[in-house]
Length: 423
Image 1: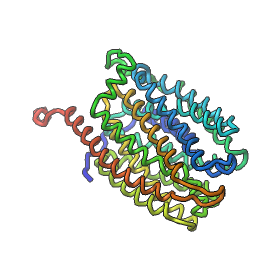
Image 2: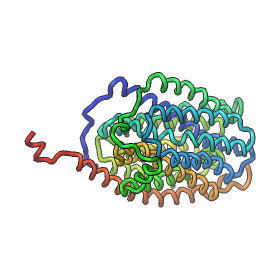
Image 3: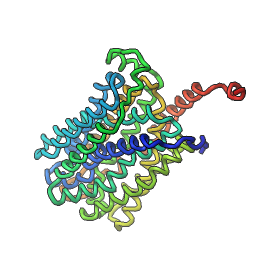
Image 4: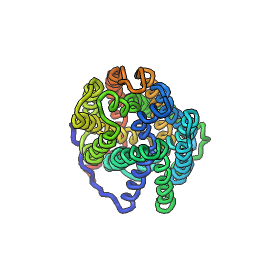
């Protein structure tokens, strides 16, 4: 691993608030999406859903989020990013309320579509805000903290969601997310300052023209392709995690919250550490090593049968370390590709491709995985892991190209060595 130097700046008080509010925003959005996996076994049994039907319910959010990202990409750099974040976050809250009100499969899919239309754009807006407010040498740490929402959703959100679901039904977790979301929206409105420096750096363009000018740039397309392939590999195993743990590994529904909690705690512990490593060492090498680690554990995990709970927990933690360790450096690298006046559009398109790719992955996974009866083991889940391994190798090669784009951009921005020496 090549050392690239430690960060030279520390966070201001306001920057700490920005990191916190974006992290808690990500927590609610991620929990709303991720909770579908642990609730999968309950929902499949309660609503009598087949794996393919559940895959559609999961992918409905992703596909609608992808469409939303494309539709908003042309407008993303024409408004204050705070206003954009608040608008879509309120829409996300409304969609989550509809999820809590859903009582049929059709209503659930419709509610997930509405939630995805708004929630799918929030991540790209958050990444644009981070890229605007934090320099690259601090961005790995910021990404690490902001994406702690992923780990926090497992430590707190998912166990609490499962507990509430056992008490009041699978709809209860969505009501919890909606209530927390209202509090977060108030904090964003009251404390977050306008993020509008990008408005001073560009001439006004028609939304479609701005979208086209963003898509046609070769370096951007390299990053878009890398993100899409990475998302396919990341989403394929996710929807059936709880169903596999219960029906194949022997984890009881009562022990499922513990499984997710321990995995989430490991994420909270490792995310800041991984963020620091990402700023201190070469981001691409860290990504490549983490990707190979992840697929190695995934292949072993998906070929397991009934095992003691402690062993299943250990394997989940090892898998989570691999997932988190590749997420932070890859996100930081991709965020360095766009110019400031293109960041909103770039992040929207990038998030859109990520969501659509995730929807395709979830749908494909639902077509591969088979469950003959409601309580029988899942079949062909290991096949999904083999496909993920192949896709991950491709993503490593593509991320290498992204890394070259970023290095070229950094070199162009740096003054020549002889000028530095003269100064």
